[in-house]
Image (cartoon, rainbow, N blue to C red; front, side, top):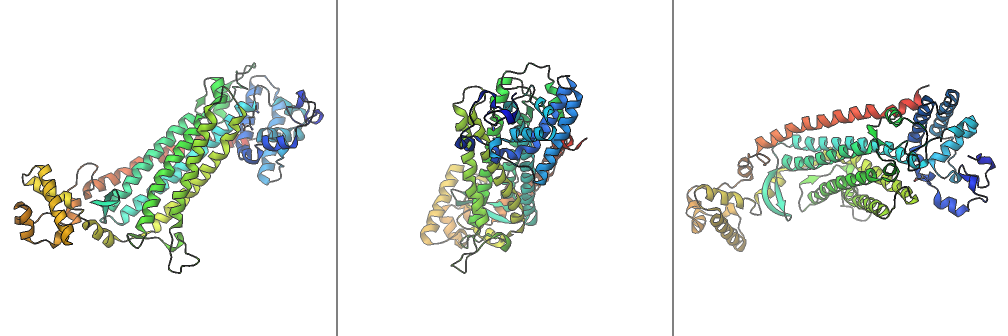
Length: 487
Ligand code: ARG
């Protein structure tokens, strides 16, 4: 390669150019403004690559020593904030290599043997993504812990369960919290799955076709903590499925958290009065002195929009790309950074907000008994006396219609009024409290106290398994840091 200093364009790739790049092109072309977040991965990847080149006899051991020393110095400078990220360096890969050349001189020119920025950027991005995935998984576990804590704090609390946001049947607050626990467990499953496909090494695919040197791809994959290598060189440099998987997982997580946030907004209204948010997690109005607004929950709901947006953007960027690498793919990073940052923030603020929220079980239980939320239980009561369900549904529907016209609720009805609808309803009183409704549902997956307690107990094991997985993968991918620190 032509020495950077002597090339007319001043670029590491400048050999075939006779004039410098237009300044506007530099500006458009550069990704250094954001891909500098890959600095750690990029340098570790270079150390692994250089070690492999030396082991395979492709570069000399002396050159390797210089390259390793120089790369560690570059990493030190980046950490110290003294490294200059120049627009003209285009991206993090050229920025690091350019600085390495300044530090160690000509041996730096051997680092890029048998490698391309195409496999390099894919390798960096996969290493960055796997860490993001583990970070998000830990945040989700913390959120599930907070949901469990709410349930444990109010083990008896009953609330109305809703369909169509109309009171439907009473449920335990804990059952409701565990429903979100299930959603988030599925999200953890998706993240594990995403991690598995992400943590494969593209390094060694070269520009697209593989390389002409006797490289050892397994070696670099191992050194960098990958689970394996990408099997096809063309796919290795062209594939951004791992990005889409990550954005898709982020979107579903955001969607789940947004649904929860929406409920917190509703529950905190004076009209519902189910919860009071802690002062530390609410905000006021600059004009209306009485306001206590659920801004945090609203932002969790609102930020879901941008996370979805990044998924759609990435799907769209990929849809028309011929194999293999195209510069369009440089657009793959910012959306993921934003999604991961946004979700990471949400997952830090939501658990303490949930833990500090005061629930009002009396208000919730009162609501659970009203709005004819016990109608199904009364129909079931008739069925248990021998009436076919459809008939029972009809009878109780008539009672509800009558009550609605008379402005009454079930407990207001006299025995005579009940008898008018069915003699079965006059003799023994039907179950009329939310507690009765809960007690009647000790069926697998239902809201009965015993089954909910059992479901809650299972969460400890289910989360424990995922915690172990996170610990194990964290150790595995820390191989990268060992490369940066070892001498
Ligand atoms: N900055 C580029 C990116 O983010 C790195 C790969 C560039 N490769 C190339 N052949 N121009 O995608």
